[in-house]
Image 1 (cartoon, helix red, strand yellow):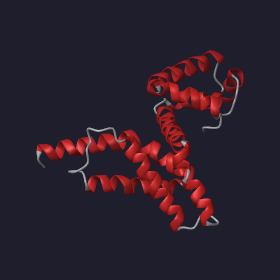
Image 2 (cartoon, helix red, strand yellow; image 1 turned 45 degrees about the vertical axis):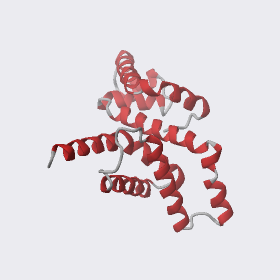
Image 3 (spheres, rainbow, N blue to C red; image 1 turned 90 degrees about the vertical axis):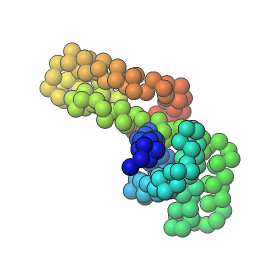
Length: 186
């Protein structure tokens, strides 16, 4: 493998790592099925890999990726007749022009990053965080449920929030808007 091929491979892998999860959640919003969503995202990345010598890795690829996944999702829906009639499909496709597409794109990317950040938490820390944030349990309830002290719960939550802040620092603005618009992100 030449140096140029090695560099292309590294750039492709970085692009894949940075966007795969968010793209899958984005496609899932349209398809309602994670397996089909992953297939579509994989197809987009396969196409990029096949055309890697022409693909401009130095340019921001986010819009290209999300548009490609959106288009493939719409084709998938059309081909599998998930909409009752063409009018529904046209109305859904028109979301590209209304700005809903970009809202969905940002939310899907954020959801993916949140899930990645949560996955990086140590097991006990993640469990405490999820019980508090997603199940609405108070610290005392978590302590009783896990048979640990309230102080341990406080420490685990402090660790979790520190990791989440660090992992999501680039998404703070989107995260705040997302929280204000929609509280059911997990």
